[in-house]
Image (cartoon, rainbow, N blue to C red; front, side, top):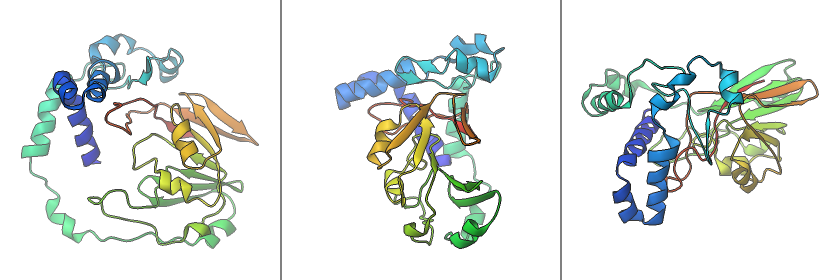
Length: 265
């Protein structure tokens, strides 16, 4: 999403102005600046020496851990991209793209149709075998061997400036969920009101750092995983794998206070 990338870049470069943030927000601003400048986004050159490691080796050595925060070991100039251009050149390219470059697709926007999602739950329940249903944004429902796995549920409108694609079905019609998977903490992937609206309290599986949020959402059973850790039960194995991303819920606490990941089911 372009807006999300813009916010991340803006927060990243705020790390160069810790004194301003300290003056503006006192201790909270200092925490944000410190997280951005020192811990959450580390110098890329310090990680280039790990370019020969596999994903599993990076995870086993916990190179994505930095104290009480987490770090993306795949950012430009690090293990996965050791010879790519550094962050300074990236900033200028970003500013040019965001402020100057012409959007070649803007003339097509008026043709886009808003089509709210409608789902026939009876058809899904009656279907035998594997079924994968796209619901909204990053929200997926997987039915496999009679078990329902819901990923990053967002059923409600998030912000006034984002068009609302709320699905046209009552929450009570959703099948009972066996597993709730959360990939990371951005609000368009981890939405507490949507989790509270589920008809039951599923077994939640998430990266490290989201136990409190999920309990607030009414989830009773939460399993937190690091990269390559897994949950296995009844022939079903769910493994958390690395991915190129970041996360943030509260700008005053800073970025990457919790982990992110992808899932292999």
